[in-house]
Amino acid sequence: MANDQLAGNLLRVVPEQPVGADEPIRAVLAEYTRDLVTAVDQTLAEFLAAEVDTLTEIDAAMGSFAATARDCVLAGGKRVRPTFAYWGWRGAVGGDEPVGPVLPALATLELLHTFALVHDDVMDSSATRRGRPTAHVAMAAQHAAAGRSGDSGRFGEAVAVLIGDLCMVWADQLLARTALPPTRLLEVRRGYDQMRVETVAGQYLDILGEADPANWSVDRALRVARYKTASYTVQRPLLFGASLAGVDHDAPLIAAYTRYGLSVGEAFQLRDDLLGVYGDPTTTGKPAGDDLRTGKPTALLMLARELATPAQRRALDGTDIRADAPEIARLAEVVVDTGAVDRIERMIDERVDDALTTLAAVAVDETARTALVGLATAATHRRA
Image 1 (cartoon, rainbow, N blue to C red):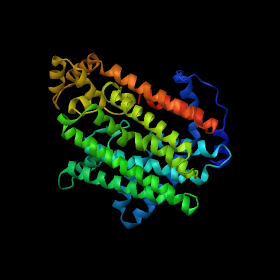
Image 2: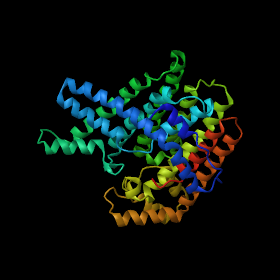
Image 3: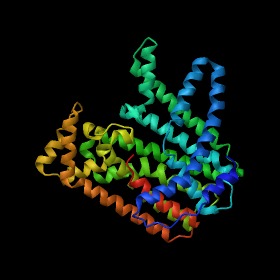
Image 4: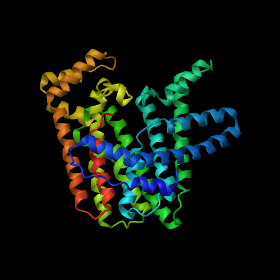
């Protein structure tokens, strides 16, 4: 799509919507972001086609491996991170700047996201992602079907790690193609690197919490949410967009994006915690109840233990990794009975309110403000 057509579609007038009107806001956002998502996907597809061809020249098996990595990137997803980055950029530059020069940078965030997802699925031993087998499961199945020697599961995990690594390298390569002055691109890279460090830090804390649940707490679970999810899902993409626009570090817009991003990002993870237990697998693309089965110390489950009666605590502490569906359903009811679900819903609403209050007090492009108000609601009151 030509840049001027994309810009024109993104500049459609958005009707005023009350914050509580979730469905109209979602409809508006869908219209606003559809062309952006298409442009990001086209950027990724063109870049990845060339990269797959290059690796195929090394060896046919490398071509197959690279194609699997490409498919992980292009296999759906909501493109949340490029969307927040776009509106962070648009909030600073207004509606007259063409988006084409920064499209490689926006698409870079999707490659980074794929890296994180593929590695996270290995660490969590997840079987499905977006309704499909995860990368390590798919590669293990290929290994078994081909009758290769060695352990299929171990092979699948090793290849998935390499897929994630390749996506990280691809992200660096694509970011370098952004059409910005070198000094500005260097500033963009500094924020991008900080985002990656914070993602790794959050992931480590997530793993540590599973290994040491007795010493975990609601506060530490929220810290995981802050660094594993809020940083690289909302906050850093917004700041990434502002950096693409050349906004100074001490500008009021940076402070507003930082606070908005932290609040919405934490709320996003808290919604994820609820969906992990109560979501519909046909909508989320992942099985429900895995967090309960493994005792993963999410904010929801930490809060449930904190609020539980002695009998409820015994039920929650007695979770078995081999628990069947009826047992998991019973435990999910126990969590509701503790009051933890209602408390998490209030925490989500409080964070969204804080984000919207912050956004209302800063000078920002009005179209971007409307989109960010809608995104705060859509990202935190979703079903998948």
